[in-house]
Amino acid sequence: MELVAEGQHFVIVKENELPAMMKELEKYFPHSLKFHQTIQTYLNDRVWQFQFYRAKTWPEDPVCLHFAGCTYTPDNRTNESVGIFCPPDRLERMELIKDEDILFDWHSPIYMNFTHVGIMHKMEEIFREKVKGKLDGHIYGDIYVHECPAELDLALEPLAADEVIMKPLCIDDVKDIHDLYPARDIECLELFEKLVRQLPGFGVFTNLDNELAAWSLQSYYGGMFSMQTKPKFRRKGYGIQVAQSLTKLVIQRGYTPFVVIRPENDASRGLYMKLGFRKAFEAVRGTFVPFAEEDQPPVKGVDGVENGTLTEEIPLEKQCGLNGAGTNGTASEKEQVEC
Image (tube, rainbow, N blue to C red; front, side, top):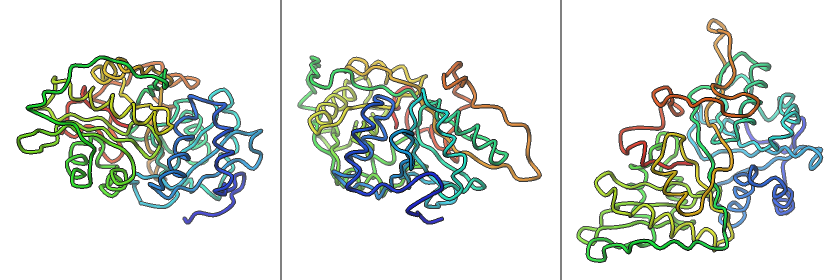
């Protein structure tokens, strides 16, 4: 399915209209932050060719979409990956999506990256009503937003100058970055090449052989894309040094830093809370998959979600990413931060 200018209830947003759309989205911070900064990064850096849609009754109905996503999807179709924003206290307005048979192919998989649990719960209700299916391979992540962007004062132990050096990432570092990234099955190498070329990132490198020990990179949605530390370099303070440096730079570039942290990831949560990040809301990512006609069991709601609120933690062994993405043995769960 190719992108079209107008759907049943949504219309494509022209580029000169995007700044006004961002202004309207600011009314719904922090819930709209990811969508808002995806537009901001698109306008500033052109990392990826997104197409943004708004409800035809915007701003009375503050529901908006964006295609195409940067992630691998089951069939690699243009409209298979979608971002959705709707204020959590107005989820009834997502009824507009239920009737959107032009922009959505309801009989094919639909992938959504980390999205507010209330939106995902409502989307699952819509999907079940349109076709029999389920939310598959879902992973929970908490959105942590930096609470005082005007300042970032934290005394840290300096890096051991005789052992390592911190410097900006470059294109030669992309393979190492991608190899360590825990969800590399759904994020292509090309995306990381574009990010490193066009957005800021820092790495800690050994002086001896220039090996990448830890890194962090701004994402196409303006937040902190990922912070990773190779296992043999952990507990040396490299991660928090890199994260602090990038947080400062993201603020200087006019963005509000935020990260997605798995609920079970105590190490990353502690690190970012030291830097001034606080939990804003819970999110889920996953793929809406139609059942085949011969395989249509009853479908329950999103595990652990009731009225848009996470009510129970999903055991780690039951969590998995799209097509098996997620934990892949390259890094400890407690050291992983991903968006």
